[in-house]
Image 1 (tube, rainbow, N blue to C red):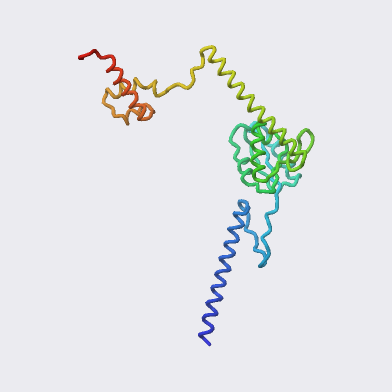
Image 2: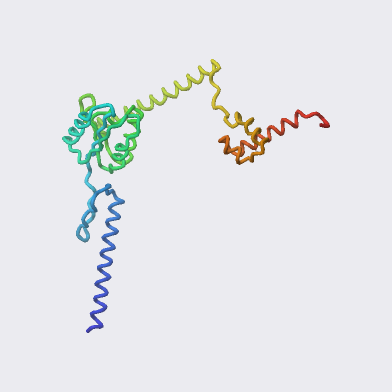
Length: 253
């Protein structure tokens, strides 16, 4: 009888071990399938029941510039909470500066979620920047909701929101083309006035210094490090000097 019990006990232990491994693999799969940072792993459903997808969330983002009062930030947080946001990312930062909380919000949202802001200017600093954000959200399957856009709430998941999204894209392209046009006009004007010389050849400007240091006995590596140029630039400077000296030397010299 003992010979029968031992194999059964070993089989039970193996089954328990496999069950623990399966639970661990399911938790890891849930993380890759859309678990959010800081969330607890979902409870494993009964055998044969598919794992339910993560519930979509309304994720808020609030921002004021560093010069504004905290009351403005609190008002945005209050409005986002009233709109049903389960998570709100907030910060006091300039629109043109580094915005760590916006980056965290963009990383946090998953497919089916909605990023919510009170006004457009709280999210983006320009039409181009807004379009870039909306495009990144759209690629993740995330919509953008603006609680107050000209007195109306707009969600890019709706038909009206998609229309506005396309209008944003058109404005963004228009701004890009205008910027390029102004840049070309500025370059053409500078060239006509003789003020545009293009990129300065920094290595060529340091050729005399390279030859001087070489004459003092410095190695190519030491010269390159001292002048902040590449070794190849040093070699070209020395070869140019050697070629010039050969061309200007008198026959028989």
